[in-house]
Amino acid sequence: MSTVFTAYEKVRLARDSKRPTGGDYIRNVFTGFAEMHGDRRFGDDHAIVAGVALLDDIPVTVIAIEKGHSAKERAYRNSGAPSPEGYRKALRLMKQAEKFDRAVICLIDTSGAYCGSEAEERGQGQAIAENLTEMSTLRVPSISIVIGEGGSGGALALGLTDRVWMLENAVYSVISPEGCASILWKDASKAGAAAESLRLTAADALRFGFIERIVPEEGIGTEDFYKQLGKELKEELLALRREPALADRRYERFRRMVGVKSQTDSPQ
Amino acid sequence: MALLLNILKPRNELEEGGRKAAPVQQDEGEPEKVCPNCRKRTSISTLWANRMVCGCGYHFHMKARQRILMLSDKDSFRELYEELRAENPLSFPGYQRKLDTVRSASGEDEAVLCGTARISGIKVCIFAMESHFMMGSMGSTVGEKITRLFETALTERLPVVGYVVSGGARMQEGLFSLMQMAKTSAAVKRHSDAGLLYISILTDPTTGGVTASFGMEADIILAEPGATVGFAGRRVVEQTTRKALPKGFQTAEFVLEHGFIDEIVDRNRQRAYIAHLLAIHGRR
Figure 1 (tube, rainbow over the protein chains, first blue to last red):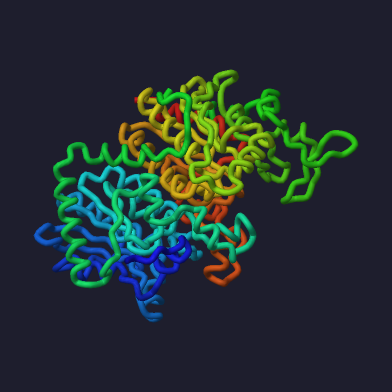
Figure 2: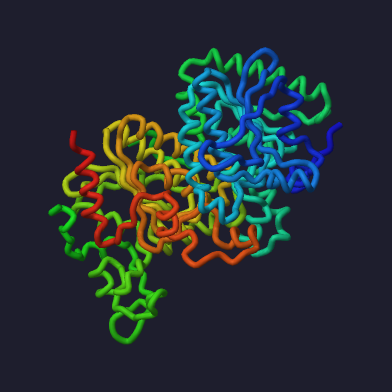
């Protein structure tokens, strides 16, 4: 029997340092991972780990935001807050995947893009924007999975994919509940109420049509869990390979996300 | 370049264009505004004659409708998608009331105004975001209107010119707001891939999810002098780094120096400047 968690309890679970990180998935779901570093522009962002690997017998490009488990790892990984170089590295490898006709799998786990002054100087907004435009027309299949925190634009920058899945206790939100509470109600302690209002759970995301699938967390971190996930990823990639006009379907996937009522449906 | 030297005469319809004028300082005589930069008081009519730019060069905020009238040929603006109004898709507490209040205070239904217009005779799709409407934040309707505008521009093979101002994604619509970044970006890309021109003009402030989507995706990115342009808010950056930021951090001048925008253009030069760019791109 699984426990029923409140939205804010899920936020805490999603942030738990013991939870499997991007690197854990890379090691356990894939084989033969070869990491590719650097954006070929400025540097290598340790918050994003990316490279090529095999998903069973299928070559894929894997891009994962890595938070790290221990305090030391977290410092090295900037707690999974990517810098512009990380997003540019991700884009470089996605374009490489396109060149070699490899599918792309993104593992998302971040409280948000890094908010430091250096990130601003090097164009954090521009880096995210460019990923969004380029991913929208990528010619290879792509799947992203929110494995922990899906923090706003910094998460979406790897999430403009053909399929988006979420772990059962992962969260995906436009703003952190603490940030939302402090801006709207001038009181960060109301984060619990904000978490409810923001509809940030996987069940909410599925209900509103933002994701296609919830990955159950039963046995999370075990061999069986990773094996099952790998199997499902492979099936989905093979199904995506059969879909014609993939980029057009991806366009329609996001085009449908309208929270408005309109008198007319025509574009004029 | 005769075109660039052509300084436009101020026009009265600017004032009529704003559905509600924004008198800040009401003295006994003519209404005045105090410049936050040089502290000088200037009458509204004098400021209007200079497109709401103070003698010191400070650019006051302008309403979306005023900006469109300022940029476009007389009587050429045709509004599109004005029937689209924000809903409260998540039933977020207090949001509906907030929308009602902001609608009556701003005279607008949403934080962006879209349509077609002519600039020195060249037909364009045009948008202007409204800072008086929840600081130009992007929810579903803003994203939908921007997306439709780029789709219309693609169908009719028109350039897009847009004034950007935004505090970012609108949190009251949750993931619906976040996904507008993806949706608008995909629409910009389709328009771009068809070889069509998009010019954005970043005004104060351009931040968050709008910077990280269609704000920064233009072929040519212009900005108004002194405008705040960035991704994370200044306070958030200060909290993250625990350091005081230098003066001028995240200004238009700062992002120009770091290579992220093409040019800073004074408001009084914008119409001629953009008309010139449109003319260059109209030639084959």
